[in-house]
Length: 555
Image 1: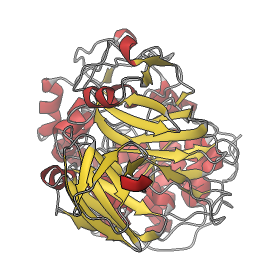
Image 2: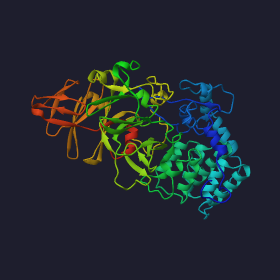
Image 3: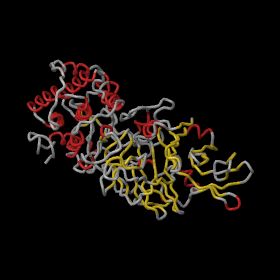
Image 4: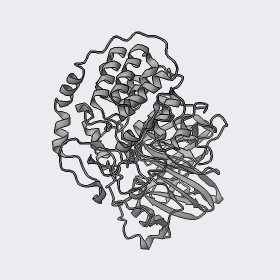
């Protein structure tokens, strides 16, 4: 039973609509967008809700998800209504790509002609008036679930009671609707009321909406809960109306999967380096060392799972990998059982915790929606390094590494996952703002220190490659970044020591000519002095800027 709303919609399920989203054997135009330039992003693309996206969104459709072979995934595709041959997703052993014919159709004038045909039906003006709080959310839900008469009644309600708090609900309806008549009239309504002319480009609508002060309908949280609970009943908890939050609710966007639909690796099987014959020296890995326990998590595997929950060196840890924003962050779990929520915030995956179903910002490491908000909770960041398998194994011949035996059927070859996404600078999901000082997907090294939480710093990875010894400070903390031959960056608290060179391997020299030895935990100098490692991680520039718009940038 759906909670809230008028009697006409109470108890009505979204079965017809949900079957369209979840059915694994419909004929999709499918493509999975693969890993970073070397190997990264796990969500449906912005614009994949409809085949009738504008030409500017056509390329986004080519990165829709095919998860039909795995029960835990919602299958979310851009659906083809013609007879374009597409492989059966149940038989697909690796990502498929949208046909060039389909892309040509999408880039043609067909969408505009269809829009004109739909908009030929006149829509009345938009007088503002008061409506029962539930009437507007119910009307939007009817556009997704209703028959012809219910849809007509819903548009009449929206016609007479529209105000700007309707815009977020309209965009979410537009995002999920496959009914061309509904999407066409919604676009007309949005354009007439707002004065904007973004057509079917939901990304542009979202960017415009998020640039304005957030005004929320009193039943918006309930609408969002009812909208997504049929996809996964657990989603209802995320948007309960009484839940505190620190971010705008309209910026929380569904990523196309159920809770843990991108399955975390929990206590994954590890093997010795000698047994990892599936890895080549240039394959990208995420390296961790805690209390002498050395482990490697290959990016080619993590791209399909986005999270590992493990115990390293006796410490419970969570490794959160946001493939969309290119960030792999290691946190001390702190007693929280974290997973993948299925939702995004500013193209950054939102985690959830099993105990309270609170939503957590991955880049911040803090709860942002739910009972844990406002309690001063922040996950402790730990050190992790992005490097190559060859370099990591050379440094740590006794390392353990993820086994291909994960319990899931995936194509774990290097570079397979999200290849298309990383070929261009385009984004799958909209963000409120971008910064042109660097291309969107240029990699940066990001630092946020506990001693200076309000001073985030981004350093261009290209800059660090040119400057293998780099000194800086955040608040009271002086630090040095040492970049090795593979391009891997490690950050150490430098205190009063000034380093002038290092062999890009294990030995650094300070300005007094003293030798310091690099390990994963610290720099060890003469007379037993130790300079400890500081947490830092790689990210795409757009993702870091979306999370820390006031960041300092070194490039």
